[in-house]
Image (cartoon, rainbow, N blue to C red; front, side):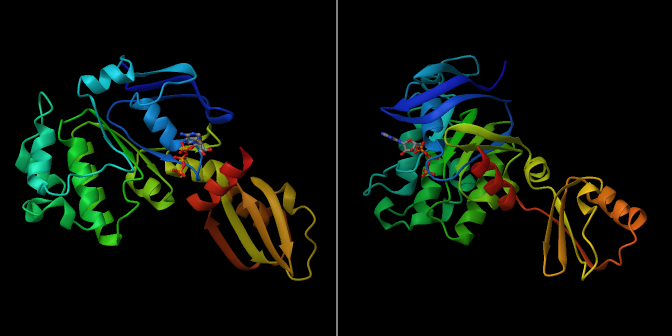
Length: 294
Ligand SMILES: Nc1ncnc2c1ncn2[C@@H]1O[C@H](COP(=O)(O)OP(=O)(O)OP(=O)(O)O)[C@@H](O)[C@H]1O
């Protein structure tokens, strides 16, 4: 049975089309980054998946059930952007309270250890830093041992150290064969912490694959060299080349196959090539290109 299935899902808020005919399947056990610029429809997609919003069109299933049923069965846990904590409860009391709502929760000590909260288990919620409070929200999201974990911009309020600890906790949780879907603006988070990246822009699917595939498909590589006063004619016909830029005697060839382009450059031309450089487009370049195009 497929994990998460969006089948031609659209969501309107009045005139705003926040999600536009989105179809995708997420296999159980994968960690997926949902990447997109502001207003792309990431939070709306997560809220649809949690059954907090209803699609205007299309259907969503989680392990074969409607979202609300999957939530009721304890299959999904979520860390949303604005989860309030009860100020006077300690970390341990807060986690234990939420654990008690689930039929088969994780052990309290295991949750505290996984979310790196053991040392501050006795601290009241009102005394937590932003990053610590986020780790408590993470603990609450995993307390019921859900098979599917949804995280909406989980590291938004965290400093570098907190981020590292948070991602370690997420990987611990995912390692048990669970499905994790996290929304982020941070390309490096998508690149480092997911098996698959789904890029959405204006509510539509803009790209879907591993971070490496997306970089290769959308960005490709560049071969740069100094051309001087030599003629640029024919560079655009070299194997793999998709675009040529010449500025002040410097040539930049965009290519889908740098090896073939280089072979063509040396064997197929008589150019005197100097200061040769090869670079891979990063995810940022791929992302900008994709989200502008769609
Ligand atoms: N309750 C609402 N009423 C009207 N429009 C809304 C509502 N919620 C979201 N929108 C609009 O729907 C679109 C998608 O918003 P959404 O919050 O899903 O995007 P997002 O990708 O999560 O953005 P961000 O990265 O800024 O959080 C935006 O144009 C937004 O203004």
